Amino acid sequence: MEKGKVFLVGAGPGDPKLITVYGLECIKQADVILYDRLINKELLNYAKPSAELIYCGKRPGKHALIQDQIHSLLVEKALGGNTVTRLKGGDPCVFGRGGEEAEILADAGIEYEIVPGITAGIAAPAYAGIPVTHREHASTFAIVTAHGREEKNQDYIHWESLAKGIDTIAFYMGVGNLPHICAKLIEHGKSKTTPVALIQWGTTASQVTVEGTLESIVKIAEEHAITHPAIVLVGEVVNMRNKIQWFEKLNQENFLHL
Ligand code: SAH
Image (cartoon, rainbow, N blue to C red; front, side, top):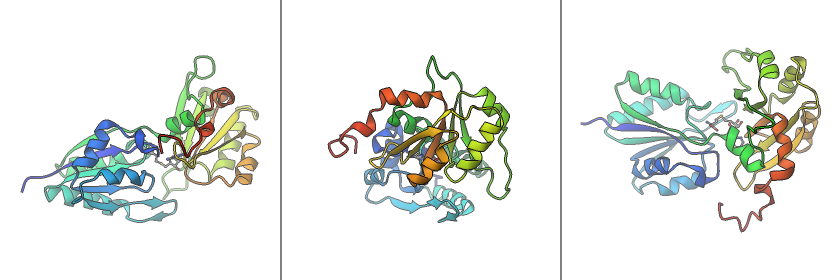
């Protein structure tokens, strides 16, 4: 039997319209779709009726399928001659283990493509009215995971470089670590008054944004019960929101997108 091919596809950050044209094609053509928790499930309506849909969702601290099982399934389904689409939230290579899965496929001699997606750290701010760069306020932007490798309880972040060298920082998986993030940035020289936004369920109808500063945001997050998934965005660009906020102003029921 001829080997199938795997497409490692970014589904975008939440709004189903934010998938790429090519990503959608990969959904339509797939015999098997392995999908993660954070993808918009509406996208699965585009799958062939005969397509096999496999949920590989993970919740913080819990795993529906462990990563090894996902690897085995990808290989097994592709070796079975299927066109396989591995659908991940945002971009597959931004904290999405796309690289690890591509390595497994390369080792197994299975053909694959990587189809980028719009990552939450850029899209959620954009929908909150915050451009991650701006000619006057930010010329450097970093994407950071607030989680190291889970099995090692180590802090891999070079806080001083981040605090001193980067204008806008998007922390992924950061809500649980918010007190630590704020404390470290202040300790390493970021001003306590640096603006911070938390954007929960960005680009979806449930999007919620709260704002504060490195000093105040922990309390504000608690008051608003902000939870996963959310982007923690640090930097002066957060202030732009006062002027260019748009998505949350729209009447969501009439909103064409969702
Ligand atoms: N590959 C994904 C990121 C996966 S890591 C991407 O490129 O976007 C999961 C983290 O992404 C979450 O903890 C959260 O910080 C962020 N995230 C994903 N979707 C989000 C959304 N709709 N709104 C806010 N944050 C989101």
